[in-house]
Length: 217
Image 1: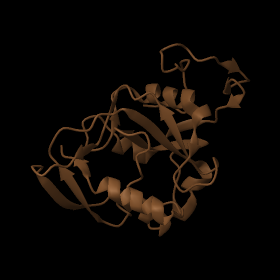
Image 2: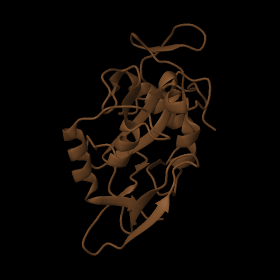
Image 3: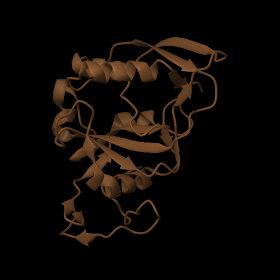
């Protein structure tokens, strides 16, 4: 099971060990940036599992946390966020990631079913497709701050400053957020975290995801 702190030095994308400086008990510094206490959310740990119908990482939980820690200085605000205080996206080495999407073709067999992400959330129609998964040329990990997780009657999974809530692996560098997730957030529906998006962001997301479906397992 993944822990909140990394037990081994993080590696750069070329496999070399990143420069670390100890700044006291339980605190590690990468150059001048102090990395907070990171951990898995219960939601992500159950959702992004090897062999499942979502993106997954073919390695240990601690290995992935290690990559996130190494990439922390390169984090950027999550889509629709103005700064680095609520939601961040951390780029990581895509090696070992498996995409959760299939590029739909005229021959693809599509299946629709009514599902719920979590028991307290509203149901929605999810479309899956049989076929080869797209290649993971880029990978990112989405993390929510402790305060953001508690919005909209949400809960935290542990005593972490930030929790990993989503694994993103895609053939393109800037994969748009799933429009249903955007709507869940913007409308503050159960399971969402309040956030506003522009019409252009929604349009780009709808266009991108109109050509893809979740991989069938």
